[in-house]
Length: 397
Image (cartoon, rainbow, N blue to C red; front, side):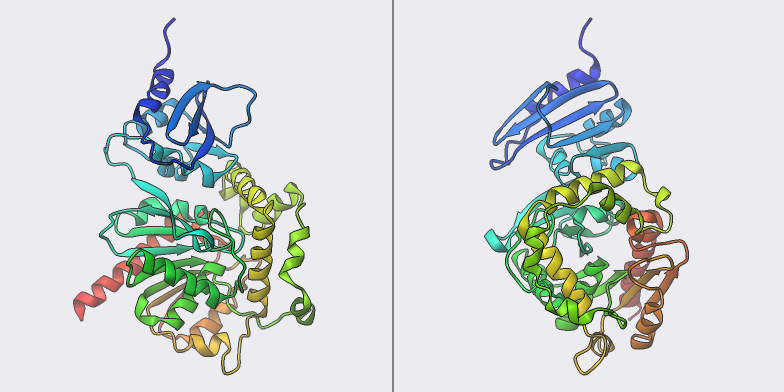
């Protein structure tokens, strides 16, 4: 009996290997239906072998129909993942590297790349999708997250914008330098990233901490921020029990906190959603796989702790308080809050509306802290409408 069409397709991958990732060493386990093969990449070499006892870096599971659509360039892995036709274990972050390794026909699928920008302590990992000449749209994730948290929105928004979803410094695959890790520190590093790409100004979408950083950027350099969509932004807290204790704690203590039960991470992640069943179980597992891998790094733990500490210490009022400064924000802004958000109370929507009466402010009754994952289609549609209205306003003006 001859090899199946799936096997033959997999075995053509070395011939289509681009070989432009000299520093990559990875084992991708691809399961298409009942067929399982390991794709082993070492620098400029690629081999397809039968799966054995060697543990892969990432597992990618899909059905034959989806695989052939991907192979023919009619759908991308990101689109298949967003449509729940492809499942990842081991690392969503790592899986993003697989597809761009190979040549494929251009038949309408989303085309993207994952690149590192900058060097050493300033290196930032970013996903790029969409027309390189289109208006840049920067996506900034939340505390403990990575660029993967915006994957559900990428296919829709990349049709109109140059989507750039980054791992903030200290998180994901980006460098983890010593630093302050407050909103201004992050903002300046994102501006440096934009300078390296010759981006004068951009649209922004930020979730949680990423929303707070986006707002900081708009307050620091308004000419470079065309508009901000803040999804459950981590705005300054008014009630901060144990504030004096947090002020005394040092981020360096996180170096020792290397062990964290996996089950606790899964449960904590599920609590971020109004209805955890809206998210596929496989997504939780893959997201936790990523988090657990990153958490092993002492520098990643220190960055997480430092960023969390500064979010808590952010002063809400006073001459230099967050809401005092927010009132001077001049760029168009959209705020989305979730009624069932366990971290950012929807009551913050009233404070934002008071500070920025011209901003769009919405409270979703059926959403938690991560609307782009819990309600991806609605979130993408709202962002498209918001950013699209800016173009209409300019035409009218």
